[in-house]
Amino acid sequence: MVAKSRLALLPSSLQAALVERRLLKVIAGLTNFDAAAVERISRAAGQGGADLIDVACDPALVRLAAEVSGLPICVSAVDPELFPAAVAAGAALVEIGNYDAFYPLGRVFDAAEVLELTRRTRALLPEVVLSVTVPHVLPLDQQEQLALDLVAAGADLIQTEGGTSAKPFSAGSLGLIEKAAPTLAAAHSISRALQSAGATAPVLCASGLSAVTVPMAIAAGAAGVGVGSAINRLQDELAMVAVVRGLREALPNRASVAV
Image 1 (cartoon, one colour):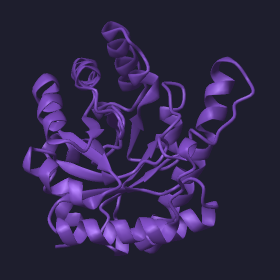
Image 2 (cartoon, helix red, strand yellow):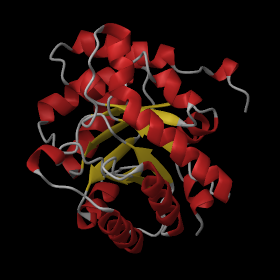
Image 3 (cartoon, helix red, strand yellow):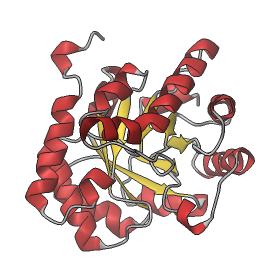
Image 4 (cartoon, helix red, strand yellow):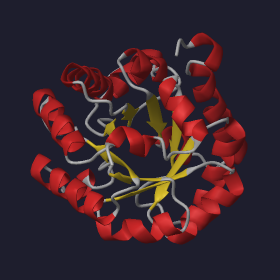
């Protein structure tokens, strides 16, 4: 089964969001196993107009997030053996990465390891949509090559990252742009490399984004965005909903995107 046909297995709402380049994924966190926190984030994502929720790879969290949000669920992990149980619990897709939680621990994923994780996941789940994050620690030309290799190995979606490496110097909007610069650059480079090679895998831009920079991600070539800390660091659920709505409004709507 080829990647393009696997994308057709996604819920129709996600397929439309990718085609119209307006997908909004709310990221609860790869290492966030706090059920109460995941419930708050998931409810806010649903009320705020997100398309997808990304939770830690745990069947109970999959069921909880789906129940309170009414949205499709993605699970993230760096251990492929964890994915099948989450898929059995209802996850619509699986993701390798992103790796932000590991960098402070000194854990770095290189191209060879990410490629091997992708192959193992595809062997375990030949007919499940697979997103793979390209590590931002690689130079951009190596990120481009890895993205091409990942698609050849069975990745259906490619995700970028980079928020943890950014060191913004400015306040306000300029600081938000500085924060997002690494992942925006990766989205631009990878999306063009895939397009030049004739690869059909959409690119999701994630890590360090805000309402100021999500339109830039789409302009850079991404089909959607993933936003985590801007939402999950908040304690107040109403504030979370407001941030999600702000992100939704910053993205293209159905009427403004030529399909």
